[in-house]
Length: 396
Ligand SMILES: [Fe+2]
Image (cartoon, rainbow, N blue to C red; front, side, top):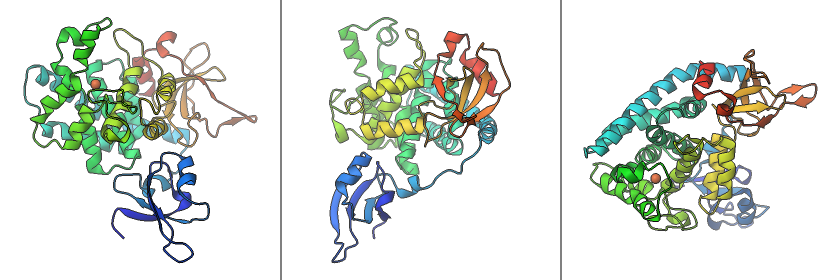
């Protein structure tokens, strides 16, 4: 059997996999070719007969069984808090290095200096390693660092979210690195957009918007001369504003005609833009941003990728601020992938917003007199007089 073909049980088939065929190749169970990408659980029933057991999947460009069959050993909320606190210094270091790189990248772009791929690769590699070591620490930082300059945090966050999604989709290390580089460079074309258009505080005119829409192709122009950039990376950059239903730009590509990197970066880009503070708008909470993005599922965004993104990032991502139904306020430590509405949290404030004992709770298992504790809402911390810096201090 070729390296990229794996034989698995039907019950192990998950959305995100590519079914090559089914059947054992015997008289009673002949082999049948399928050649379909599984987008949802409904597709599994559609493509595979009820009585089949053996399924062949292609693993090279799609989700591999090893990516989904491995279940993390459950840890308690206090263990999770301890692991997070221990991982934060390394995550800070990687984030600070990435910020330094992003600042240099944009100043080089403005002064017309050449971009060097070898400067970007270690930054992307460190982010991939950091995400693998402790996903929650990287995500927490991406939320708590929202008070920093948007231009730089945006390219780092888009990189982080894209890598998390790509990892979950089963990309190998080299593909992850290419996706990460494309995400880091996705908006370099903006360095060539006239600053009066780029930095205009108000609404853009139709003409100005057309100029702004030129940035993916301007990015391609800048990056074409960079040695060592693969075609996949360039496509990831130039296609990050294409939309799944063909209404994006610059080429109005559609569906799977858009490079997977472009489809992934599109989700990461919009999510970060919505959840960030800008001069002209407040940050949207993570839950609100996802609700909005779900309305664009299948129109703007690849539906399979969007589902996976929500699973990976979580409805209440690490680093986000929530209020529980007993009115206490808490910071999310870790998401429970099997119970996305019930993350692990660290209690910070009582209902009068007075600091209280920092109890760590796993909402998926917490039970008080038969009553579970739930997330009531995800308030905007700024509305309660709490800024991101204060939240970061709570974790320290
Ligand atoms: Fe863009």
